[in-house]
Image 1 (tube, rainbow, N blue to C red):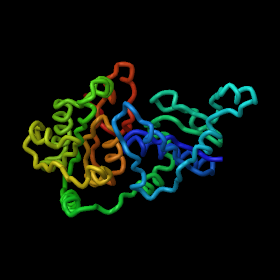
Image 2 (spheres, rainbow, N blue to C red):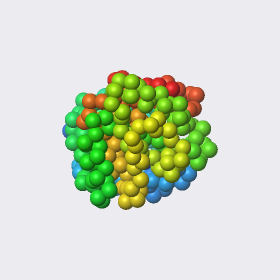
Image 3 (cartoon, one colour):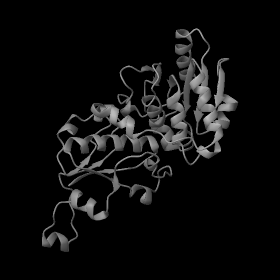
Image 4 (spheres, rainbow, N blue to C red):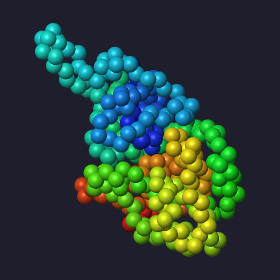
Length: 294
């Protein structure tokens, strides 16, 4: 008996999957396990690695026997001969990106397949999730220096500019879309109008060179975070994000978590549309208190 969660995608996605599974396992008073097979068999997706080991979390890897015993119905002799397999009622595939209210009535055992990008799945244990996602110490002096700079800033603003596969992969670009310069201009204006002191920008991106050549800081003091040691350890960048008081996030689960894990009392500005795909326009995991703009 267990809750098994299929872990897939980048760090932000993995954190959503863990948080939903953790909440469910706690409600059912059962063990939480991970299915990490996606990282072995991924084909056309952006290459990713399992990264939840960055946190001190209580979960173990599920064996193939664990997984098969939950997701498939027991077979009759003839079904075994014909190699016919059917999913059991314990196999739960996320029905849509919107919050699914039946999540609260799932029984043990269960296999969760999906992204579960909604705080409502784990809001009742938010304090536990924040403890689970406590960050480790920074790995280099550059990161420690930036962390100190953020902490000493009265008006620190984390800005996330997501490019990478959102720009380079035509299918991903059409599906997700990229936050426009106008979005960042409006978002920064919201913060500067509220605070008379000029904000200090800490800019995070998977393409820092593009940011250096193209991003308009509107005259604000700024630091572009470009730490080579963080390329294979992006959770350190998320840690730096979380130290900022204000946040301008991209349509990305990475900066969603950077803002959600922040202990600051500042403003969070998020894109009104999380996806460019027309059928996904109504989905947005941003919190009600966050300011959503185009």
